[in-house]
Image 1 (cartoon, rainbow over the protein chains, first blue to last red):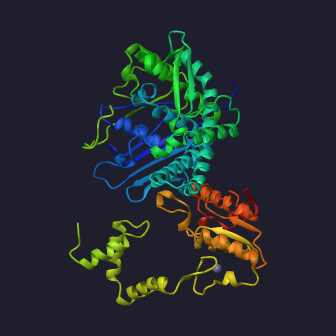
Image 2: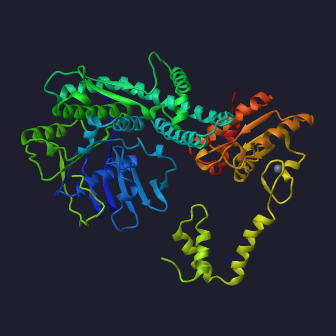
Image 3: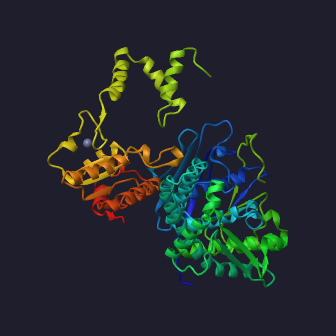
Length: 388
Length: 205
Ligand SMILES: [Zn+2]
């Protein structure tokens, strides 16, 4: 174990008009940070703010305008990151309904999302994540995109370009839905090209990711499960991929499949194939998790997925991601929650942010723990549903 | 909330139609203009009208110009075998600043974007084809078309469309290399970056 991990940590965070926080300033420790406070939204909002600084969005899928405190004109976050070499990066994000969301790192404005995503890697584990193994494929595509984007800025660029190409192509299909002639197909050509070009790059990266991830997931599952089941992920793109061994072959398959489905696309006037239709299927031994697994299996797999995600980013980036744990102790009994805290405090993780309703028993932990009382002067937000 | 003056309301409405100007900004501008002397406001109004009355588009390259054809198209020192295709007049300005490019231009007036209702017919694409054909019949054929389009999804699709049209005509089609940050704009790229991009262009076929 002589691998050196570059260390980056969040030293402080300022929240202005962000959710429950009118103006909060927090200073964090390098290890385990406990965000403790009454059950409201203040704690989760701190984790959300950290996530916005790292990945630009809320992990709860909340729209930017709803992150602004009710009745306020904008929100602003400022986080000071620090490396073990002493370099400082101040990330500032400001959202205003009229100008949108803007980012600065050390005062320099960021032009591209890819300049931010992956610079401060982060893994979050929140009650909301339950959907990952239980709900529809969209959650699993989001999982893929969140992990791979942080590992590769190019993937994120491709993803944004693909979405754009698909929207353009859909607009064109819709505009010509009643047209009998074929002259307009010449105008569709460039969008088929763009869809295949970006789409196949995404599929290719997802294929490679799933292959590398299998082993990490297996090892993580072994650690968290009491029984010996073997987790497996099957990546199922929207078109037949069997045997495709290169990016060019993926593009070729995509092109062929797109030609085959044309009559249907024509009738429905929208893009029916591509990475936006991909599925990821989880198995435990040979049981499909989404349909047949027990509550306990769901929970164990989810935890393993998160640990494996952490291990993947750590290995690829040679850096320890920030770990955000939202209210994970609430689900565990006293004994298990003590064991969980021990695992966290034992190390192997970099900086950890854990929200809890009360200060847990930390007698067993040796490492430095910082306890932060989160009690902003809460102002009720009539738009809010409690995220718990 | 509305102002009691109809003239104020009208000015705000017109200003807020401009790109990146919201209603609040428009209100601020109107309040500012109200406080200016009449001559100042008249000068602004004249400058705006002159835009439509005096400025023309060059009948050859579709760049903005006061004389038609434009000085670049009529210049004897320009290499007529080379056409650089750009999106907007601002891009011509950006490339001219490098003082390295000696060919001609063709301004498309936008990029293909079904979402914005812009197809090939809304751009100066047919005019580009005619121009190349005509150059061949005049005995000074265009040899190379450089596509200096922004590296966006729409830029990619437009470049692809143009390459498919132009390749059968026997001209070399190239696209400037991606020295410019993805999603960044040509207009704002510095001279050195743009120069590297021009030199490193790749042939599309
Ligand atoms: Zn001209």
